[in-house]
Structure formats: structure tokens, C-alpha cells
Image 1 (cartoon, rainbow, N blue to C red):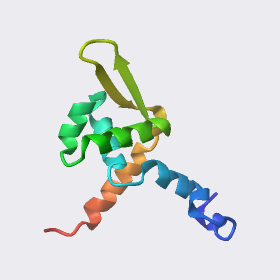
Image 2 (image 1 turned 45 degrees about the vertical axis):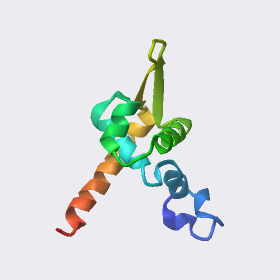
Image 3 (image 1 turned 60 degrees about the horizontal axis):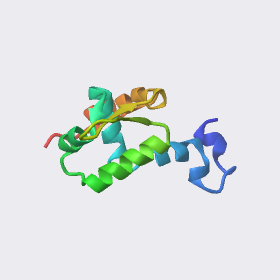
Image 4 (image 1 turned 30 degrees about the horizontal axis):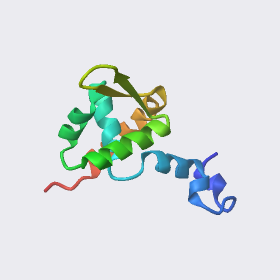
Amino acid sequence: MSMAEYKGKVKHIQDTPFGYTLSVIGGKWKMVIIYLLAENQPVRFNDLKRQIGTITFKMLSSQLKELEADGMVKRTEYPQVPPKVEYRLTEKAESLLPVLEGLCEWGVKNQQPK
């Protein structure tokens, strides 16, 4: 169903497929995390933190947990000392990559030079 078909049929945007999509990838960091995982799978927590730079450990942990709960990220913990944890995208997340590439292309075409 297209966005136009939902017009007037739902009371809240979060009740639409568009709203669901925004709930899964919305926010400042989730698309960045998905992008970095797509480029370098699997990735360890500290490597993600290092690549993003400005994100706090608490926020990165929170965003990864949300992405995992939404079925976008798979977390693998290896029983060793010190603990080793790796993150990778699920098939569900990989199906979103063409959409994210489209957003990047839009940015390339529309970003004003500095």
C-alpha cells in the first residue's frame, strides 16, 4: 500500500509502514551504524565506536540493542577472556541497503559545496 492509500485511514504516522521504517532506522546513529556494518562486517564494538567517533559508549550500546531487537543486527558473543563480541547485519537489514544507497545518491546530487 502506498503512502497515498494510507491518507485518512490511520490516525498516527507510526501506524503506517513508513512510520515503522522510521522507528527502525530513525535517529542520529542507526543509519550510520548500518552503513558501517555493511562496509566492514563483522565489526567489534570498539571498532564501531572508533569509526563513529562522537558517539558515547552508552548511546552506541543502546542503538545496537535497539537494532538487534528490531532484527537488523546480529550480535555474536564468543566465550573467551576478554569477551569478544561481533556485530553483523541480518538479511532484513541487508534488504534495506539499496534504499540507503539511494539516500546517499540523493545527497551527492543535492549537497551544496562548502
